[in-house]
Length: 285
Image 1 (tube, rainbow, N blue to C red):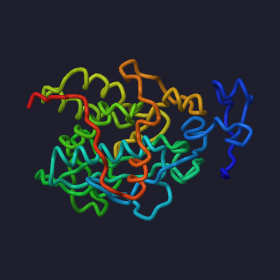
Image 2: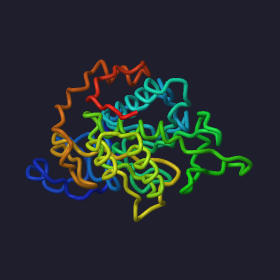
Image 3: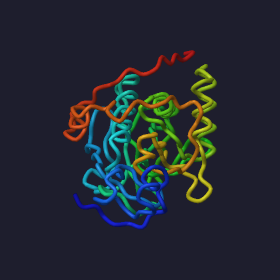
Image 4: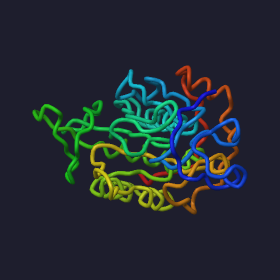
């Protein structure tokens, strides 16, 4: 199998000790693979493509090329969307933006998204009167939770209920190992206030608040969530690197075989996902 060449920083761990500083996976370094490098400087092998649509989600660009990620990321998006759709039926779907290119590396409009661990998720929205509606796109929300639609003739409102359910699933789904939810401070504050008002468990609210972060080196992310997964121990040995802390509350992840071949093939075919049980999380409402 051939992979696109890209310059990478030295890969730490077993691979580095054995082969030294390597640019890409090669036959001389068969241990390197998957998400290789850091999110803003790396490549990707063994990627899975997110289907153009599925239970509770659609892609923002149905025919775009940048919808590839490590299997765990694709499964997380599929799972999170289906969970929100099941818990709050009848609402508009989650609109999914870019993941990564099939072999990683730089893609237009992004500094990161190079190693298959990043995905952009547009916010769930409602009409000003509260009716669920499909997201009008990357529109910027203010501290009042409102955004002008692209034609500036109407407004859309942040759907706090569905967006919090999405955040809660990303935080509590054990196979995800979510590291960051990049989002503006105003939207983070609205979501945390909503969760506190509902009496959500503090053991969910605290990780969510820690993971949500307004970036200091890019846009404030007031028009979408940018989700990034942490490296697992197995992925780190295979070349996956950093990009943030390994949170203390992340449970030890199961081995990579936790997602069976049948499940991964089902994702590639666009079949309905097999939903693994979530930890028990009861709200106060």
